[in-house]
View (tube, protein in one colour):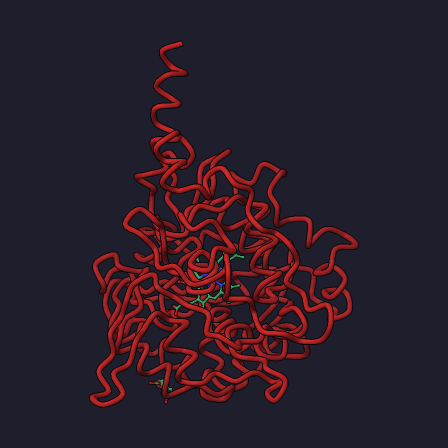
Amino acid sequence: MKFTVLLSFLVLPLALAFPSFLEPQNTESMLPKDGPRPIDVTGIHVFVPPGDNDLRGPCPGLNALANHNYLPHDGLMTVEECLSIPEEVWGFGPDFSAIACNLAEMYGRSEGVRISLGGPARLADALGTSLDQQGLSGTHNQFESDSSPTRGDYYPFNGNNFNAQESLFRELLQHNTRPGIIEYRIARYNNSVQTNPYFFYGPVEMVISTATFLFTEDIMANFDPSHPEGDLSTAGLLSLFAFISDDATGHLQYHPGHERIPANWYRRPDPFTHATAAPRLKAMGDADRRVMIPGGNMGEVNTFTPMDISELTGGVYTEETLFEGDNLPCFCFQVLQLTMVANPKNTGTGTGTGVFLPGGPLAKSMEEWMCPKLKKLNEKMYDQYPGYKKRM
Ligand code: HEM
Ligand SMILES: *[C@@H]1O[C@H](CO)[C@@H](O)[C@H](O)[C@H]1NC(C)=O
């Protein structure tokens, strides 16, 4: 009895102040039914900046979805929302959704609670919905990784892995083309090697951080009918990365968590899947092999020590064969698969593993790509890197 009273005491004021807690979210499909149309940013999807208790974190794509009330505005999403909403609104492929949501589930949250887009949730703690989860910000070197496009590296930036850094964002603006993004990925890798003693570029970190460069150009761009390949305008990037520019002075103002989808912004016409990503990953390797070889610094800057690919993969790949045929995309997706399957927290009910099962979309492509059969990663090799030991 006392408990019920206490509970309604807690829930009622929250429900009044934040009605979205109790209302079902709008999950109506955003797929165009009669030709392309821009992402709806009107009505219930108008931009509302996060309040003090709304959680935002390292992912600009998800932050924007919460600010436009596609995801819950408080920044806590269910696994089902994670799987469906980014796909519907942004065209994030079902395979990437399954993988990203599974990583978020495994590393970012506790069983049975919603996933925080940022750190642990204060407000939601009162409701018991997010107790002792790390949130996406708290998954350093498990999911959240160094050498990202606009977020600083965890240790050099004193644990602030979730805010954009103005200097990095300015560099991104200078690289807003397809070849530019590849060059910028290499530059960010270089910068982590040169400034971050604890830079850990393990197989998963390599794939995740590299993928976020592709998300920037291949998902967040404007695919309006006159730009079928996508357009990353300065104005669009400013809005999507929560910056406001003073045109007269060139001064930039950053509003953390205020990622906003511009008006007349068109979603990519087809979902961004592993098949779309494969040639882009190969282009990264062609531009500079180093960014496609895992490794890390040894506790001091400029001590990057690449992993021996043959030792890592039990001889299935070598540093030479990794760059032949479709082997590089094979390796990248196998890394994700093996890490997910091997994780003790993955109880088998995990959302992500299905895409790799026989008949699943990734299994099919991996057959077509004639992927070498990689059974296991030699994870013992990670122990030599101090950045891996300091993961969270
Ligand atoms: C399906 C759910 C998703 C989850 C769980 C997720 C999670 C994350 C996480 C943990 C990071 C940090 C990674 C790192 O530091 O390297 C990140 C970064 C990023 N995500 Fe997402 N994400 C999702 C969907 C999306 C979508 C749909 C987009 C694009 C619209 C997107 C765009 C990005 C970008 C551009 C970054 C890099 C940010 C930067 O450093 O500048 N993500 N995401
Ligand atoms: C990265 O560093 C390498 C080796 O120091 C150098 O050859 C390359 O030009 C650098 N690339 C960029 C984009 O900074």
